[in-house]
Image 1 (cartoon, rainbow, N blue to C red):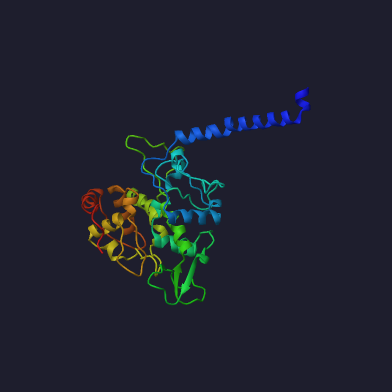
Image 2: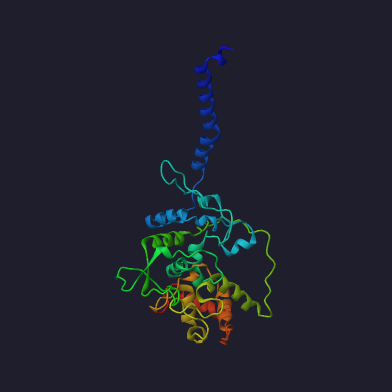
Length: 334
């Protein structure tokens, strides 16, 4: 009973018990996990600009609408090439000594998952337009406009990053939309979000619970597959009606490239991107980023050539394969 009557012994014992239990239950397992788990080979640390962009992402509560985790269900194939692994988050560091950092995995998808958005949508021009006003590129978007990350200048400096915003979105202001440093930092972070490929010989986790096959409304299977590829990879810039956005992204409806006979240029643009016209944003190498096969490229071309009133010649995977082997490492024509 003397022990319970001696407050010094009592509180000392309680403190030691608390510290020991904390080490056993929290600290030791955390150290074990840290020493036992590592990021995947090839995973790159955030650049200084991307790290600043992550802080802006956190400060604006973007995680409330966007997750950063691909689950092992079939519907998540549209967000990544494989389900997320613990190793994808192994290189997340503390903000500083006193503060932990959010993993940003999120809990819901009011907006799309961003795990692999750096591959799905690597275009800096598109991301800047989207931040300025999401409705410019996605009419149904409920995302708020981050126009405060931009300024409007009548005479931009040579060092300014000018955003190609279509007419009618400046609310009476005159001049050019210029991205601030914070906007560029945020885009740098978004473009850094890429799934790292698994080491050779390591099978990726499978996707479960397959969705029902989409209705093709009488279209040929190749064209229907091309529509899905277009929706997932091209529609955000070129729009569902194929008319693009004036001053931002070119139309595919009636395009001489889409309807022409120069398949080498066409396939080269899909695989290697394109940057030849100052009035439009830079197109990223979508086909290379997404590892398109000849079947996927052929399906995409056939869809674009048979949609929006286009009536171009259909192609086969065999002829696309020959061209892909030639243009794969060759930059698209300027």
